[in-house]
Image (tube, rainbow, N blue to C red; front, side, top):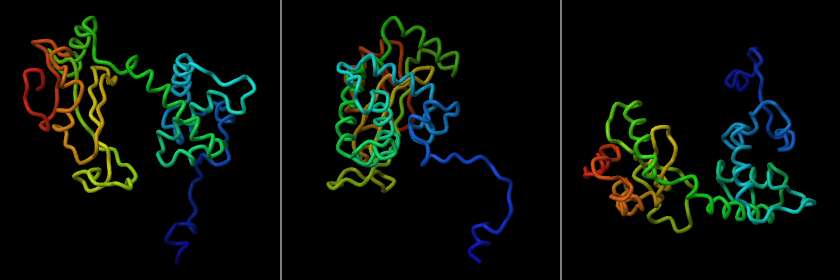
Length: 234
């Protein structure tokens, strides 16, 4: 009955199944397929290498030549931690990195990533505004738009001090608000506890506080019904 229920007794066409447990990071780097990266890091290998090169250029102190775990593996570690969640000391297991070293490497890489934020996540400059505005009109038909704004709830593990982290959908979460341009690139990010709604998150965001600077008169951001109407926000 069990075999029939889970179809173990039924013949079926074989399909290619990726076995990630036996594939090391080094093997994945050499392989043509990108299944390991998609499963573990939620990106393809080309995207991972692009991120690695950016972090390599921004890293102030690179590992020694004889270091056991090279910088590229430490980048994979922090991406695995960010993609999969869980605890820092457990994130190194799929990469063969000890619990203690995992915590150290993840914090080091997070520091580097934080130092890069304004280079990659920033509101359009005066020189960019016209191209972003024309891009939005070409893609959506809306004129005078220089950004689209929305929020999303990201589930998290229940914190020990969980009050305020439960969202309206009754699970612990962080509320993430993003402003994107016409090609979907992130231009601003704001994060708060899940109990805050979109309007509350917007009111406390850096974009709201400097709205007239980021969005000149006659132009506006485009949001949904969760936001109040403003001169600079429709």
